[in-house]
Length: 218
Image (tube, rainbow, N blue to C red):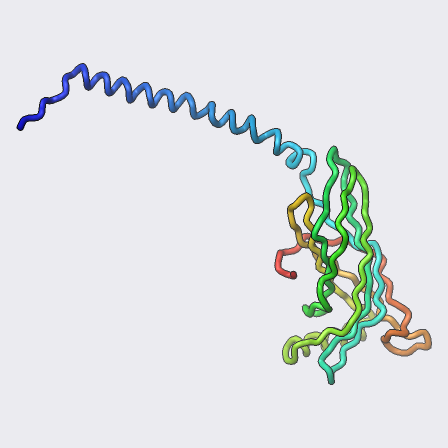
């Protein structure tokens, strides 16, 4: 059985067809890219140009009423509050904030669970204040964590200032971000000159900025 070789004319037709297909693909590729850009750019302009940055909250004020470590119970008694603010820049669009949570930490130990805060819609250039408070008794795992908390509190009482970190999570227009806020309080003292306790005059934090944080606190 013999196979007839294709004629030169047939070979030329196939070569021409392949060349036309390659040329068409080369011409269509820029067109496809152009159409994709034409479709995507209008949807990206509001985010990339009009709202290029997420809003980092700050702490407007805070009060520390009690922070004490009970070595016998391996527990921290805490009572503090803060006012978080989200101040948005001028924008053509309103921002929606949801899933807002805040939790205090001392020497790496979370004090109670995160408190959920109400969501809100922020108009152009507006600002929103969210008061939050935490109070309770937090059990500290014995061992290294217990020693770290006890040592940090003893050292900071001696220095006269107690620093508490507040971790904040918020979704801005659906995009979640984590923030860390450090609140430094003068050590609360009882009005009669005694030590820290629930009857003490609170230590006041005058406010400060928060920073972007790595995910993982919550």
